[in-house]
Image (tube, rainbow, N blue to C red):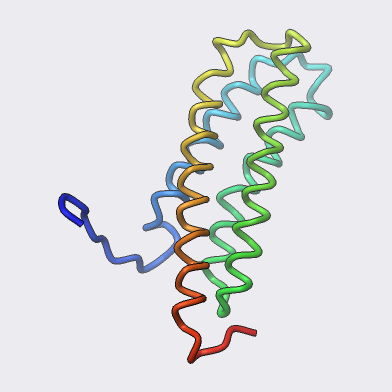
Amino acid sequence: MQGECTVAIRTYRDLQVWQRAMDMVVQAYQVAKAFPSVEKFGLTAQLQRAAVSVPANIAEGHGRTYRGDYLRHLSIARGSLAEVETHLTLAVRLELITREQAVDAWRLCQDVGKLLNKLIRSLERGRKDSSLTPDP
């Protein structure tokens, strides 16, 4: 494709989706700082755990031997991403933060979701293309 840059992927740290997911974690932690202290063991902890789960599952999946395992971890990451979006929405609806405070984190979630979907489609396409090497 014209204008497309090819970068060698040596580790999960080279993946744009992992890098953006890490940015999303930082942003989620920034948002959570605005929550009242009574939410420390409630929504704050849930938001932070879900956010951390996204890049962690991308990294773990990348480190697996089989493509099916990788896809399963990416699916888990996608589920955690939906959880982050839900926690952000709840925080706004509960008036723990303003919509404006959630917007940057929400946008990062959208970016990560698009990148995750592209990676999943690419791996699924590769799985179909490599019918000579079965994936357990």
